Length: 203
Image (tube, rainbow, N blue to C red):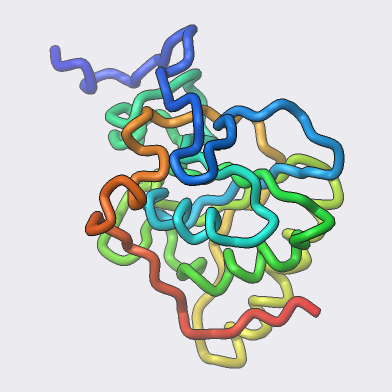
């Protein structure tokens, strides 16, 4: 029997990852800071998504990882089977005094196609689904409201229905070290981000 002929069960210990962010030098798992918040988003392959957000002023740390699934501490290979039910996601820790949640959500909606179910472009599978995982009630309500507003704008443009999974974050699992800030280390690497061309107006 091959390993992936059965559902991966994960592991008790976290997958080894980077200690520091390759660009900012900040700890990839920073201690809590007053005035900072955490949001987790999935927009397809996490390499391009992380690059998109690490350049936003007010974002302290980004990290590639996995969320929304059912197995603890999954590996990349396990997530790619689709059997763990995790999505490829990016953790965003941001200064709420410098960048608003609405600004981050605008970037989220405009830079991928949330109407594609379990895919982004040629990347297909549940791990590539569109997702927003929130860390407090205000984030959850704001994210849901932003989806309603953006759906109206998509409707006006003749686009499809949003399929984005929006729910509270359960657990974020850091991806392997080589995935962290991948496109900084490999500037010519793959990036599958592509929006719908519809502008997102949240205010």
